[in-house]
Length: 280
Image (tube, rainbow, N blue to C red; front, side):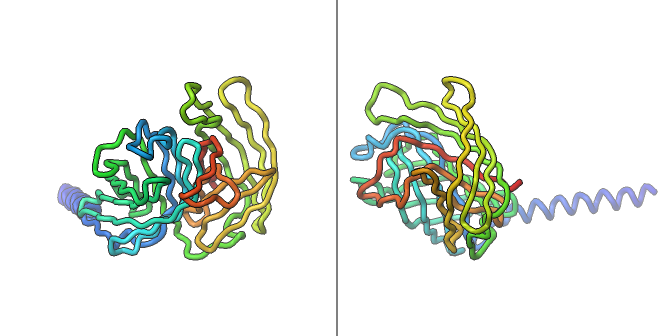
């Protein structure tokens, strides 16, 4: 009996060592594929022509890793209430211990391509990649910006990829006026969204800005899914942008505008609000 216990313990130890070795032998090729990205945080200050963009920020989009260190990004961003669509490239390095270094060359209004460097860590068998901003223009940022990247696990999407009931959670800031001494108002929305799989949806939610009781907010509209698993939701003159993750079991979403303009002419919406959809 003692011998069997000893063998059993030895097997457990070996399994633990094997698992540890597997977790500590990461490479960039294992991150090949598409991820749904959600960036949130604050820029407390930004240099030169970027100064008006300092404030709360969100970005929602798709990140494609080629498995060789090349990265392509398609996203919608809100920087202190200025909202625009963007596409840019980047570089990814993955260390054996599953930590990472990511450099994005992000086009920003009046500044051209700006190098943003992030430090990160991979988890959940390469399903999850979390990164935090380390530098802008090579200097430490006054920033709390982090990005959560979750594998899409789906090669091709259609309207039917978003079907059924989803729990919705969103939060952020509204009524942003750059340069104003009046701070932006906090905002939160929570509820349920039902997609019909054919381009229509209905929602039953509650929202608050912290100034009073919850406000019921029901609405319905249309949505359009691209083959890249990026989508837009439109209702009553409003528009949200999103990207699917976890094979359609969830999505990252943000308040945007219909047909967001390019970085050279951002639209000012005065809101920085994002969140998630999670399959019920």
